[in-house]
Length: 349
Image 1 (spheres, rainbow, N blue to C red):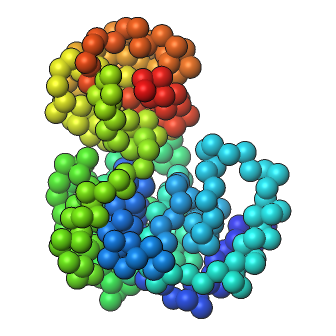
Image 2: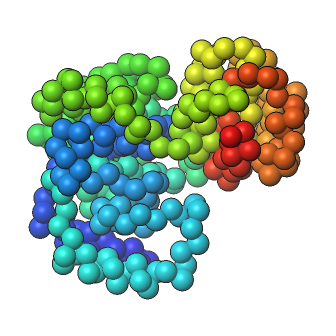
């Protein structure tokens, strides 16, 4: 075992054992972070900031999750933290003695490869387990979508029998998750873009939070940057630049279709899709051309969208794309994190 992971989990497990927080755990191929933030917003509104810890950013891996539990705020994507590890580990050990966990802990769990979620669940037994939706993401490391569905379904099985599992009826593995759950199951069904909002409502209802409080919380500014965030200015921009998979691309394009014309889809490559990557890009491209008046591709794989205009990098697109946009356009910006389409969003501000 990685020494860093050993020390981080030693520290996190010590606090979990001592403080016994109520744990809400979220997994899925889409909307994990948005759902986590929405649920966190409802709980904070109901119980106060001091009673709720929401895992920071994308700390959802074997190294990241214990850091989220201990209250670290580190972005592995944006910060080079190699030199900081000795200080992080010392701080983790210190927090294991001094940093009492709040009553509620809201975390997300990633599964980039087989075994990831099962490994996390050796340390975590959720009171509420939520599977947002299993779709085509990180398939490069899986033999099939069925193997991915089985991995994500571990959360349903690991949730306390006395707890609650929330399952999406639109999930292709819904019935499998349902059979594996030992806890009470609540089903939901909604457009993909509304998953975070719907799940937060259901969690609040289960915890007997006043509906008015739930509504007030969800009207607030809880949605994280780059996750279907609507920005108004010279253009109406849907900033969904944080990451991308076929299922989240389809959801974002559906959101764009609700916006006024002219509509422009600026789509980066979708990474880590394995042997079917060309097929997935072609399918998304067909939908994009149906719903948008102009499609702009960014990154090598984005050529398979058959875009009206293509750029090799987000940096080049950010320099040139504004000059090509129609006035008062509604614009979707989305791509895998490695494509850094957030640079394009910055250029549009």
